[in-house]
Length: 103
Image (cartoon, rainbow, N blue to C red; front, side, top):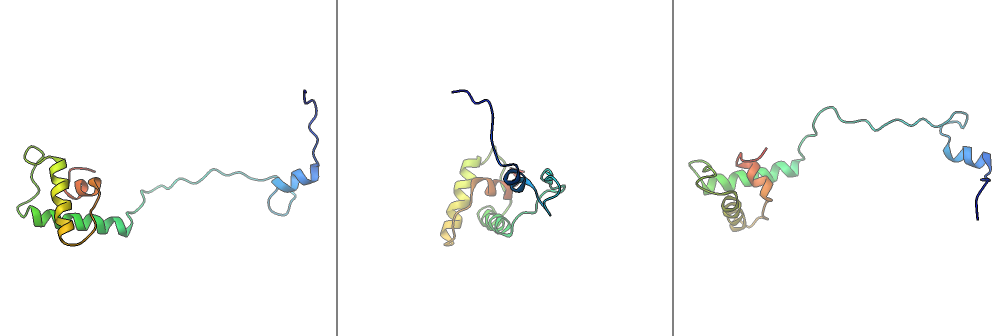
């Protein structure tokens, strides 16, 4: 079977794709890209603050460098401290950002 003609009702076709009052063709505009970076949501800020507090409790003299404490050890220690306070743990990335080890 070979299709040689495509049959459709022109009025229905135009009505389906015309915007406004129906006399002009549709205008397709590309999505607008944000010019400024989005702000962090309050939830993310709260989680990072939770991680900062746990870091300051665990390491009162400041966060040790990577040679002293690896990222894995740091994340584990902070999440243990957060769990002891009865709160939910925080993601690895949030803890490393709070510690200044990740942008």
